[in-house]
Length: 349
Ligand code: KG4
Ligand code: ZN
Image: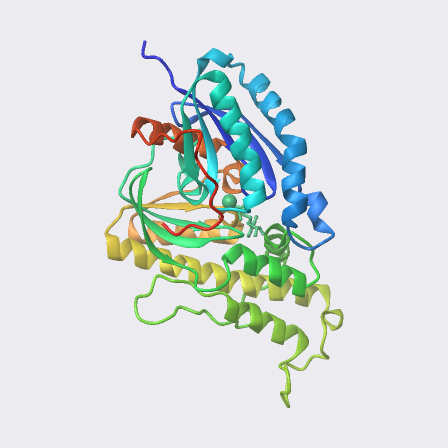
């Protein structure tokens, strides 16, 4: 029997401290995630300094739990993979130091993983291998990008947002609607109760066959719908301010916003499939947990005869299984780092 390859993965790029053990790139043995959401909620967003401190406090326990749950002995670990870009610099450094120390202690290779590429790989976890070439739409709190992939490790950027990320737009609109933080899940729930055709928000598609995205216009459109257009003589018939909207009207705004955002995302995904000829579509990132996007993307894939790969919810949002999973392919490709590996907050593939 061939020796199985076990990768230990670390993720700490934003507000989740996560450690996972994955066999042969797809079989997840353990996937422990410590979320800091409760510590950031009162500020309505992630506070970087709080995030890095919370990572320091959590990382040892999360590592111990992940090792214990996996049943793996230390000498069975083949390599340590870690998110080293992009992300909050203080947060990245905590996971990176933990991973370097562990790799050095175990005497195994260290692998640097790009967080966004790992989101594009997450759909393979606990599932069949992905058929390449593929088009991946990665949309999260910090990114909204389309990629053309030839393999898990070879990806080319097709387009990305020129302003807000989709998740960021969700978070900001949730704040305008006083629905709480993080915005994605709360808007998704409200949208299921509302009418997506109630308000006609703009679908910003940019010029020609552009595969770039823009979400600042729709965010402003929601703001004006709720608070009125500054200096305008007429408004939408409402007194200004969210307190003057009924809960049904708020749900309708959420549903209409979600309908517009998921239209934009899936139209671009379809365009990318057409331009590249890829037969596999992949969703990834926190916004890929969105019920409206998952349904609409499936409809588009069926219509154009493509296979859609959607990760289960737990692998959409930040986790270390996707880091260990992609780390396996980087190890096979010989893309190994050393203990000088540095953290990079922003990176464009
Ligand atoms: O991938 P992720 O966990 O972290 C980043 O790498 O940014 O994504 C977090 C983002 C947040 O903006 C959150 O509001 C959004 O994903 N999100 C969702 C849903 N669940 C999380 N957006 C829309 N619908 C959801 N169900
Ligand atoms: Zn992410």
